[in-house]
Each structure stands twice: as structure tokens, then as C-alpha cells.
Image (cartoon, rainbow over all chains, first blue to last red; front, side):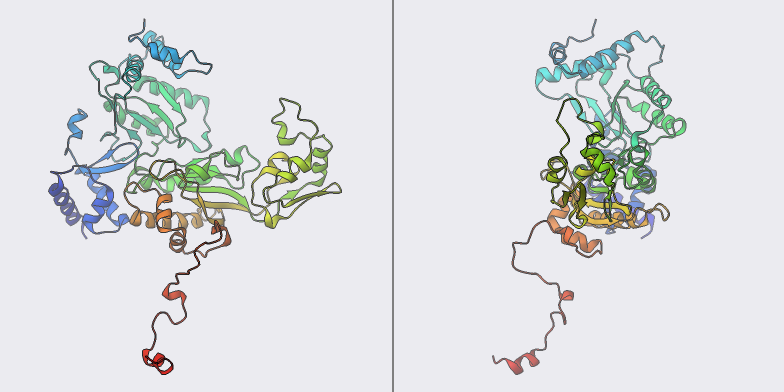
Length: 79
Length: 439
């Protein structure tokens, strides 16, 4: 799979679910791409670098979301 | 005059132990006086407000922190733990109070100059409050605001030659004992292995793609000074393959009272003359020692490397010469499924600096591939091992089962063979069968 295709799959997948939730586990992203975790990680990392995705961390667990989506950004006065 | 009244916290100071409340008050005072003329980049009264919010939490019986968030430094999914106060008007100094984890140097060797510089940086850009060290061994810098994060990260990486540590669903900052730098028991160079793997697995440390946290800890010997066996998903414990080396003259030295047992520790009271049979031979958990006619003998085949005899008589007994480490997996604290000690998976593995520790990396990467694919969200390796069984892990690692993998004699009389383990597999020729068996 090429990066552009993977990027679109993730954006579409997360946008579709964005009404119910805005933060996703890494395994959700790997599932959307239907790839092994290590292969999926390369695409996901690139999307973070391009600021399409952003990390969210509770301190113990990490999640991913589309940048600026969800309550978190506003609640943290970060936008 | 303190900014907030803190009668409940003041009461904590009355106990017999050093109090963190006194430490906080001291820091609050230092910041208020600012004798060094520091241009504080976060509110000067941050510590006053920290005391205030803590007092309020004691009063209300609930926390006033909101934990977690999107804050971090660019490209890193860990190292910063977002924290916000839910009463920012009342306590503006701690409206943002993020924690930064800094990867401690292997063995926690510092120069005083480094520590001074680090504290100066944290006074300047943070609250001045630190935790040396957190559970994973990191230098924990407590309390700063979002705009400071990138500034601090830049200074750490450019001026301190220092990286952030791990948090979230990452490889956590690898942690080791002081090892061969100061300890004669260390069976391998813990600091080199810890440092090497920290560099090797930078991607795993900073870009979260694991189901949950994953910890490495390195102990040079089975004394386990960093408690790797209880506190890390993958524990590296130094061990040896051959016989414990015995110096019979030194054994005599201990028996005659010329050498102090335990390296002179526990010497605060008179325990009476040293009794080798009672204090060493009799306490051997596998009863593999004998002291007769002034000679100490060890049946090394039965030794489980508990270290007791070596700890008591370090001048007389030393670990063998063929050294390496044991790998144990699956320890964790009691969050979801109760506390768990690690299980032995590789009894002996060579720790070979020359080939970049390849044998160890092979094991690590097979474990990660399995856990990343099979682990549920927020499931630790130890829980996956429990769910799918040690047998599955042994298969994944492509190693043969050994007696050390067996915890207890099995109580299930059935053996579930796999097809490839049975000669001829499951297929059978029905016609051939019917020749000998009627319907």
C-alpha cells in the first residue's frame, strides 16, 4: 500500500467514527489499514510528522486522533 | 506569609519523617525571595499554588487535577504527561502543571555539575520541583507550562546531550543497576546493554505503537537491585553457567572470625560468632551445600543462584566464570489483573557486546511482534502470557521447552497434541482402517 492511500483510509476511517469518539488506539489504526502493526506504524508516524494525526496520552496509555478533533484541544486551551 | 492557608498539610509535617510539605515550602520561599535573580518562565508562585490545590484536595477528599492530554514535544508520543488543574482561577500558578520524564543516564551516574545545570534549567523553565527518580528510573521534572516544553526539550537535547524518557504505550526508559562499574557480583555490563538498547529502540521509546507500556530492566546478578523480576515486562538478570568459585582459605577466614560476614554489613549489634552451618549452609534454599572437616562444598547442579552464600561470604565465594544473563518476562504491578512476578523464558543467554547483543535483540523483537499482534488494548505482556499460555510464548520464540519453564507438575492428565507433533498427522486411510475394523 502506498502512503497516500493509507493516509486517505485513516482519515476516512477516523472521520466516519468521529461522532462517537475522537481518540483511537494504535490497533484501531492498524485494523483500518489491515496491516501488521510494524508496517502500519511507518504510515501512522508519517501522518504524525505531517500533523494530520496527533498523539494523546493519559500518561500510561497513548492514543491517536485527527489533529484538533474532539474536546481535548479546547479543554486544554491549546487551540 | 504563605499565599494559602494549609492547616491539613502543616499537620503532615509533624510526623517523625522528612516531609515533602516542608520541601515544598522551602522551594516556595526560595522562589519568592529569588536571590539568584532568575527570570522565571512560569509563575513564580507555582509552588504556593501547588500547596493550595493539595490542601483543597485534602479538604474536599477528591483530586483537582485533570490528567493526560495532547501536549508533548513535536514527533514524540511520550516523555511529557499533561496535567491541568480544574480550579485554574483559584490556583493560576498550576493551571498547567505538566510532568517531563528525562531519560536517566545508565547506572544513574552524574556529575554534580550536570545536576546543578539541570536544576538551574528547571528553576528557570519549570517549578523547580523534581522527583529523583521515578519508578522507571527517570529524572522526573514536575510542573511546567505548555509553551516551555519545546524550549526545555531543545536545551536538554542540545546543551545537556540528554533525551526524554518513555511514557504512554511506549517502551519505557530502560533502567539498570550500577553493574560492573561498582559491583563485583555483576555478571554482565548492565550499563552498556541498557544504553545500547536505549539507543537501538529509540523508535519504540518515542513513538507509541504498543498495546500498553513495556519495561526493560537490567540486573547484573540475581540480587536484583532494580527489582527487574517484579517490575519489568522483560527482565535481564545476570547469571553464570559453571561452578561457584570457592576460596577455601577465605572460608576459613570467615569461620575463624578474621573476615566479617556480609561485607561488614549488619554490624550495628553483636550477633555472636559467625556460624557457617547455621548462617550459610542451613539457609541454602536447595540444600546443595555441605561444610565438613573445614571444607565447604557446593553441589552446583542444584544451585538456583539465590546469591545468599555469596552475599554472606563475598571474599570466599564468587560467581562462576561463564557469565551471561537469564531472561524473564511478564512482571507487572497490580492494575488490571493482580501483581505478577516474571516467568523464566531463557535460562541462559550470552551477553555479547561484540555482535551488538544480537541474541538478546532476536528474543525482544519476537516477543514484541507477538504482543503487538495478539495483545489487547492495555494488556501487558504478562497478561497475554497468562491468557495464551507460556507454551505459546515458547513457540513464538522458537525455543525448546526446558525444565526451568515448568512451574509445577501438571495436574491435567490429557495431552493436547498438535498435528505436526504426531507421526503421520491426523490423516488416516478409512479403507485401510475398515480392513481391520467392522462397522
